[in-house]
Length: 249
Image (cartoon, rainbow, N blue to C red):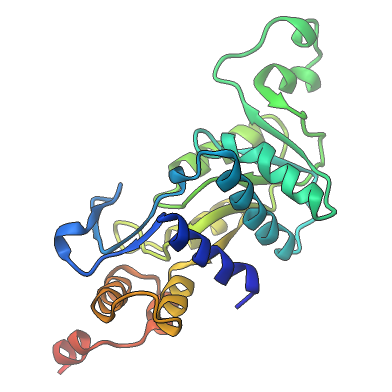
């Protein structure tokens, strides 16, 4: 595991953003309506210090992906606040890129007046308007069903910006979507955009287990959750539990 991944998990623990619960009464209800024994709240990073640290971890994930980004796009709503800090963090690591996000309402004044068709993008975005062939890296916090990601992909392509090699998120929960679809795999197949995360569910489990950073009962509940709702790769990494052995027999 890359060093920045374990440092990110330590960061999540130290800030209280990562919780793994022993007691079912503490479990969280997700957007998918699943009851989860583990939860990461990226929204807790809402001051200068924590946002700066988070941006650095995103920058590491993007740089380590091997994609040469020209500009970062913050997907509404969570991604909007990530774009500028991550661009600054990447610049500090020797990768100077632009950033932008979409407007809620089309701008009709200032630099947005009397624009040709190609420059109309300036009316629809804030920040550096990407050029025709710029490699755009999209940003968001997590990936659940992916609705906002599909909308962002469609929006960018409608502007003639089709070089969309990467979507960067903080945590990949490695869950199948409702109907047993692997949501991220399906998104990658449909859009041609690769998804990279700072860490995933198996990373979290392994770091907690190896470092003895969570109670055994909490870890077993996390493992069981992954066995039930995890992707094929995640289930294989965790291994078969006692419950599955009994059911199998």
